[in-house]
Image 1: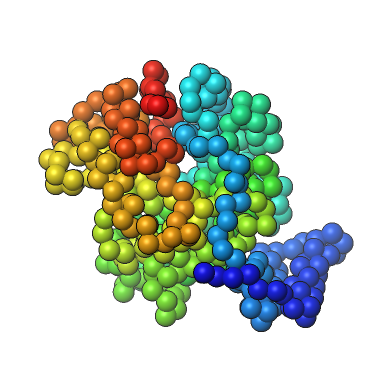
Image 2: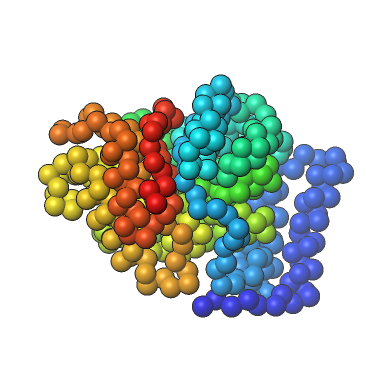
Length: 399
């Protein structure tokens, strides 16, 4: 177990001085604080903290405690920024009022990389990545509170076409000096770069200060297929393995966010619980889970291929698929002991018509997934539907 360590006076003075210098510059109006200034100040803080045997962010390394011990059992849905900032949000709030659902995961940094609300932080504004979709996030969070909805902020981390376009040096470059993109035309930024970490944490911290109770990081990995391209691309890297780099980001994020009292969660491929660590994309189920409060494996039956859990078409056998995935998840995480996070899977509320042999998903298929979770001792879940249209008439409690 990691134990709390007392910070010496000299270490504390160094940390305080570094932050006061930064804040003093911001308040005096003598000069606009740049991201470069911010990174330099946080590096000074981190160095002072390390000298005092603290965590890398200056937060003492202690046994993992849930920063939201009074949180309810979370059963939620996903909402894009367009839904959260538009009329469709009323439909989701009605769903919350009329069912056992009690949480909404909202994009504050979306799949393209846009910051979806009008940030008040000049450091975030300086990146030029803001696209105002949620016009009044404070009013939105007030509305959620009125309906007793637990708000979760989704931050898409390393898949970031917007930042890669603005700052190609933070991405992966081809020989012709253009940004490398995957087969879907999406660009990623480099998890080895601390500047990328700090940028995403600026957004996460502002979301926490706005009132979100949990920060959910998604795409906490290298691009799929990256291992086949890595030797031909130009990008910064050090001696660390990719799985260690990604785990280091998650650990650092939790240290940085701990003082704000928010939970940290990470989305991860569901099948990662059943296979060895994926060095190619840098995802290690156990390493990541050790540092988060909540782990959300994406166990959509449609995402499993023929043969998984004995099914020719896993999509057509939702109970069997979820049951097998949860048994694998428990096996993977039981060794973590007190560091085992809350398991809150993403499940399927959509029909995967592209899957050969698919079935139409409705009340029965969703309840089959929930029943499989319950049979494995898991009460929390999140429903995914990209269009944010969720099936009516589902018994989400199944008591």
